[in-house]
Length: 513
Image 1 (cartoon, rainbow, N blue to C red):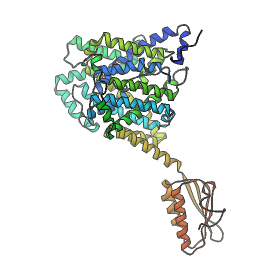
Image 2 (cartoon, rainbow, N blue to C red; image 1 turned 135 degrees about the vertical axis):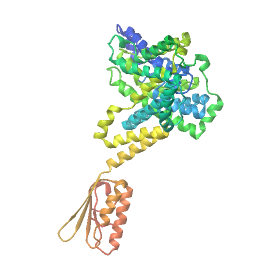
Image 3 (tube, one colour; image 1 turned 30 degrees about the vertical axis):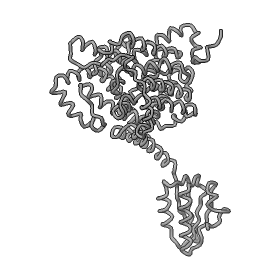
């Protein structure tokens, strides 16, 4: 039998095996049912029309699904980008969103072609966990307002400080309390659903929670705000030439970089997690980065939300028994059919129910179970996680992630620059100073304090044979100290250089100039 056409994913060869086609078709329905409420909910939480979330999910299936990279992970709008998209729409307007997503996609394609995919795996896990925790906190506090039918404040601190007032409004306003009850009921269903019998759990929890909330609102005649429906075609807003020209602004470029960094990192970390869940082909990270870039480029042209690979939908795909990329392609087809044939069904969904789904998603983004063991075993990593999360809440996504990365690099530099300074006295009064480890500028205060405390009237020997690394700052400091010591009229400092310090002295044991 001839091999699959070259434009199809390599995993499609599995479709020739008995039962695989049926298995993938069933898995695609499961993924569709999981993706539907999340696509709509992420769009509404991002401050854009609900249809734009569906468009991104459709592109994630029908475009990215055909591309090589990861065979089983599913792409679409993600809760992890909700906060950043909301901020971008508030600052630059909805019409500018397409241009930002378009440039994000182009950058991802370039990074993939330059084989930078593997470098995203080098990002500190603590930074990623801190990023997700920060997103989860902002999402949690922000969607609490939507659950109560209130407008949420723009900044993270205002969201938190406004919670007491929100609680008071819910207590005295019947409309707010009704909306909040619908949202809290949705959260309760999501929490309790995994504990139900296996037969009930065949229906995905997000779909069940939203469906039950919608039925309750309709059956009881509750006055709760629903999703606004515009139609799939009317929601498409391709960026114009003026919007593309505005991409040169510093603020816009900062947002594009944040989109690129977070979307790429989340997609590739999701790929690594999905690879651990199945025995099929492993992810090719550079190809996956290109695939995500192509998807975001198409989403940008359509003016839709940015996409990432999403672990919730991807894990549902694997657990449902998917074997090839056909499952994620078909899930995009089901989303398209739903958006075209049943658009009015979106308009009966209560906003409070979608807010409840995202409150639950925000809580799951906070790595509560990992924080305790991390703090006990790796306090530095726990500090990076906490600072990153708090910085995102207090400032914004981009600045918080950058601060986390800087702190992670500084922590690593500090931990790797271990140096031991020992002073011992030999017969005849000679002092031997032994420097061992990695001597960098971070450890200069300790080194300088030890050297300057040495007596000026004694011969000194500086033993560097145990120094694995000596940076320029330390080398210069040692030279200056030796010169000052020699100027005091004592015997010249003698140096025994190590392999990394041959430039500091000539032949072994020769004095410094």
